[in-house]
Image (cartoon, rainbow, N blue to C red; front, side, top):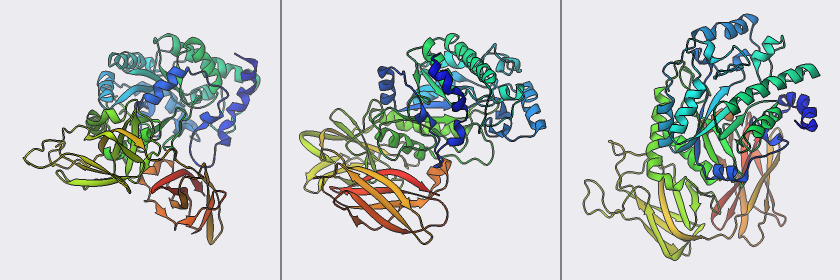
Length: 542
């Protein structure tokens, strides 16, 4: 391992204390180097979604995975490490069924927790007895996962935490994630421990496609894994992985967002709130419209079976993906990622206008949308994915053809929901309108930056700035704002409220006062370009 990397490892162990105050975990941006092969990063950019599985010995308790050990009493810690393994028997874990369901739902890879922060290893490791083979289950559960995932034709991904609470406990060190400091000897011991575990993972299970590193020290893990498997794609630790949130604007570099199907990573039998299938589909669509990938997390029950609520939502996603896969796989961002509730993905000269947030759109009803960022060509055609545009059940003779018309005010598109998906004729999920052979009506979108606010007791001054805005018909801007409910609560947040429109100065700056809300709030700058609202990223005011 390079001397430079060894020198910074003790500092990396202290990194957790310096996390950003915006409550978004994305510490991979501190990474010192990235040896991902360009073709592997290109694969991720073409990949709409993956499945994340969080599963460990404390699923038996239905508590947050690993973190209950921090600040726990000696009694709790001792029983966690000695008693929980005696009763862990996930004999209902069926990786074949999970992999087949993930594939139906459009996932191209599955990332499994080989070891979370507690230090419990889900494989037959020689480094510690705190592992799955020393439980009533006895078998190497990780091998079963790898074999089933490959058999389904999906790529194999491992999650690995270098932070290891069992190691700390065994070495009589405090269980903490903050300001943990080792002397040189303990640093070497910790590095060697993680290195040997990564060597097992990289040599005992064949080709591994994706690796997600959560915690420090990342660098020893990266060096070990890339040395043994140079074609490995490392996500967290090398590229952007904003957690429990999506970026506010499109990103050209490869990225993924790990997001839970409920609020918890591991199975939580009570006090849990699951996102609806519609919300999860909209998350997938938004991620693709911004050039990224959704890594959607599930948590099996203690016996290894998926909870019914999670399986049901994956099947709802599977139905939607079965209809609309063309708009998700190997697509790119459009010149803007959305117009109001219509989000865009693109492939070649084809544009997919994905109409979200239309729960009251009835079967047989025609809806009209005006798109300002799209321009029709002489050979443009329109269709609705999944529909033939000719027939609707029980309504012979009804005109269900989609249409388009180029007008001075924009491209006017109409579509009908003519396909029966649910028995009650209510399909609340996004409809995808395919516009073949179109061109952007905007040569380039303006760049909108949400800049720092100036809070005060009575009034907060919100500010933003535009770049590349000359000659782009941008004359006014405003701000969206709402109370901040927490990183996990994004999909339960209040609707955005908007300030009045304000003029943009000659240097691209604009400001607006806001009566200071009680508590934390988030806000983003919005500029209007040729009738299209172009948004900046979201910022937080505590």
